[in-house]
Length: 267
Image 1: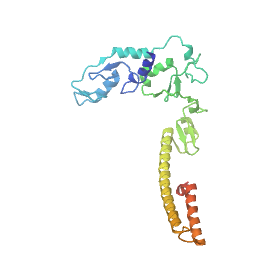
Image 2 (image 1 turned 30 degrees about the horizontal axis):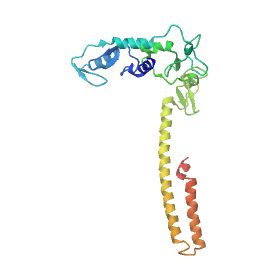
Image 3 (image 1 turned 90 degrees about the vertical axis):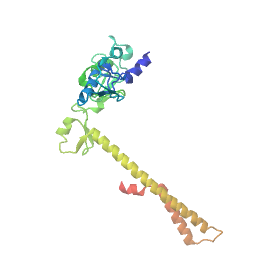
């Protein structure tokens, strides 16, 4: 039973609109479930029509159907959010575990991290993110993270900006005080810029590789023709012929050892 509960807690109990755990879940005639506020807001936006659609399957309803609270789903969500009165020894953060940032006495093991709050939460302190609408748009991450390295060591604020002048991450206070005249962007912008640069370089490298392979093929073909035309059966060869052969061999060897001369020049 516990394994099934874990599966439900991650996917089946999330509203398709807000992508968070259901809050006052309701079921509409097509069978899909939503938060009461989420489906009401979706239907309230379309004021030009008497009909409405399911955001999930796009089925039309006319007139607008009443919203029936799904009491079974409510109980499942409440059971998921229910926290035991006493913390089991397994819940206490052990060495190597990421502790809850909000536990004061005995640090409990964190179960999720919030990338907006830049903090990790135990099951107890995580409840506010599920129950309070203030945290509705906060992104919870199952991959727990140690956010200590993501805060400014001087001001304790999240490192949200990147200074291209000094090539360092900054908090909002550092960006205003010490980097006002520098070229600064958000961390997200810099990550996108780096990804785009990597993709462009990959395209250039692949293009140079194809050109190099083409040139190597041509040189190999020339060497094969040379071998046939100047084989011992055809002629005794000469110093000039040997020089041409060596020159072609050096070119092939050079392309193998340095396959992308164009890329090296750009760098």
